[in-house]
Image 1 (spheres, helix red, strand yellow):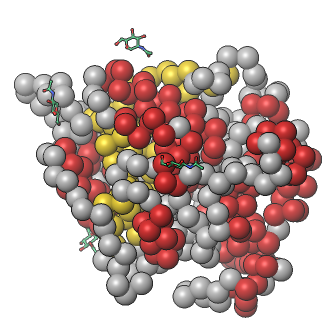
Image 2: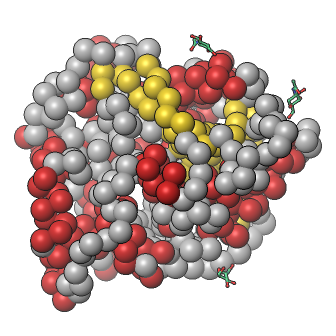
Length: 432
Ligand SMILES: *[C@@H]1O[C@H](CO)[C@@H](O)[C@H](O)[C@H]1NC(C)=O
Ligand SMILES: *[C@@H]1O[C@H](CO)[C@@H](O)[C@H](O)[C@H]1NC(C)=O
Ligand SMILES: *[C@@H]1O[C@H](CO)[C@@H](O)[C@H](O)[C@H]1NC(C)=O
Ligand SMILES: *[C@@H]1O[C@H](CO)[C@@H](O)[C@H](O)[C@H]1NC(C)=O
């Protein structure tokens, strides 16, 4: 019942009964049964979509230390190729969040979506694809993702210390740059904060970390879906233990390539709306999600390829207000970490300059958590508060005005850093 004491500015969780939410998620779609049919481009692969938007794309294959075969998508230049070609471009890696995919960053379309916006302005853009996400390879040198539960035995910890690390090394080697700029949306940020805390030598390879609705501390979250998750975490653990594969969704639902989800999405508007409103449950007022129905299937068709452990690790950090490693239970922890409690990540070791974007209506990453992170990090140098009161957590990627409100100031920041501007330590805002 711990969840019931969480209270937020925007609504009081005390009043939010889990049952009401479940009913809403099930009943609202019944009322709202608009059809999803013949959505153009729904089935396009990521590279096909990028090409259709008129941009060049390269797919790179990367093998991690623990044997996962990942993909990374590169947009080396904008619609127009620069003449003469600049071979010394600033490289930016954009990291998607939990249950996310690089696809999502393209939803705003040409010129307006973040990767295009940056590529058109001379940035060498790389899109990260975590193990088991939408990577075109989704393979392991030994494990079979469809059969071996070990394939799914990872949380954002492994994604950080292996996948993000391998992708950074790959980019540096491929581009000849000394450092890369990291942009993380939501848990994408968590992944690179984990890497920089756990393998501090990677701080030398990072120009700046930019958190879009991301911070190492995640204590004061008030997302309805997350609160529900915290409330039901033991039940969720039990559910996951039933699926041998330990995926959040059983494979036949999660796999967009399977005929099953296509079948449901195309023939059963009800099912489509259940998914859609689950998405709305993670917060979107201003966003394209709310306005442009045709984007929903694209987003939905790319959700959860993710391990259950990722969700549990996240919920545990939120619930305990800490930034610590995965909890294997007292016995498992003793075996793995030599102590009964999972160790905390060393926030003091994240020495790379850290920048934060925050919105007042972001129910996942509150200003309070960003401020606590700023106090505890060695080198926080930038905080941008989005001057639009209805900007929510998913609006960083789906919000129609993200281009002006987020990507433009992000680009200005990247350019200043590339030009050698040194920022002083950022102060915690006085009104907080
Ligand atoms: C590449 O750009 C960086 C700064 O953006 C500069 O420090 C470096 O000297 C440049 N390297 C070459 C080979 O031009
Ligand atoms: C670095 O890149 C070169 C080609 O540019 C490649 O031959 C080499 O294997 C790469 N090294 C690593 C460690 O990826
Ligand atoms: C945490 O990181 C700081 C800075 O690198 C280091 O001085 C300190 O010893 C580390 N603490 C632990 C517990 O590893
Ligand atoms: C959002 O974008 C639209 C279309 O580009 C523009 O008219 C509007 O002024 C923008 N609003 C904000 C708050 O930036």
